[in-house]
Length: 90
Image 1 (spheres, rainbow, N blue to C red):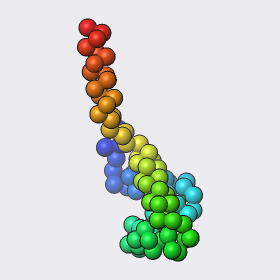
Image 2: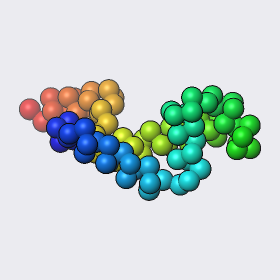
Image 3: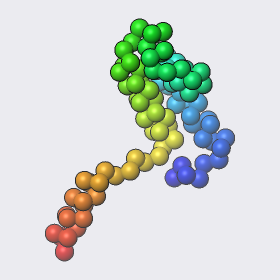
């Protein structure tokens, strides 16, 4: 599990994830995280809507999350369904 990765391994995986994504998405991510630009500023610079900038940023976060191979938490409704199914099997 990636919880035991070293800092160097984490950085390498994040860099690889950034390199694999489309240029525009990577530039939006870096503008938000490194240049501290707002969604509105990025939208003006790129000609995208603010919603599109938000979407690209969210997709970047998801891609980087996957690059680190961290599992997303199981939604509450799936946990409930599993518990009910387990009880029904007994």
